[in-house]
Length: 192
Ligand code: GRF
Image (cartoon, rainbow, N blue to C red; front, side, top):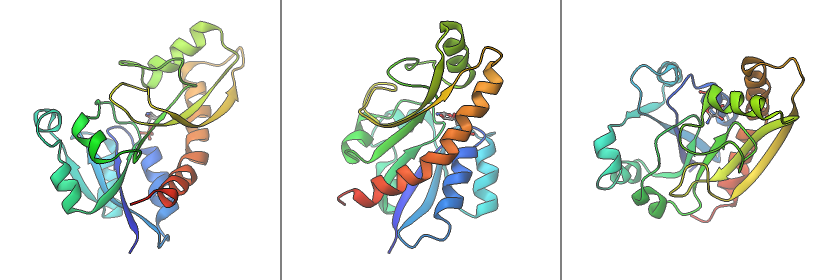
């Protein structure tokens, strides 16, 4: 039986698509659920096309009670991957999935993280700082935004002519290249 993972995503879902593609033929890991808080998100179209079950979540229920844990448990979800999911993960889930929730952030944490630091806000802040490089960070999720232990980083150069849009493209390329294989390694190394 493959280990079932859920991808939490509320945006376009390009990372989610790469993760689905990567595990499509795997007999060890299965993308079994897409969790989303935005009914208009592009990732829901991906899930529909890929015939992967979706869970559209409500803020009240997510932040109170068991944060959908009983649902995730019933579906046998063993590992959670955040790929463009902006809500804070409630303590109930952090306790239920110790070292089994990871996030990807489009900058080199601990710089440029925290509430409100997502998408182009991150790239604009990086460019405004004058840094000569940026990158991606994959980290464990804890009770604070973009704070848990760092697992992996990859870097890219910033050129003087870079804009938020061109930097975003470089970052997405790094995410697409590395995220699925890091997920695979972590899931297969986990104790369930
Ligand atoms: C990624 O850049 C990721 O780092 C951030 O949200 C973005 C999601 O992009 N957390 P996509 O929806 O996967 O295209």
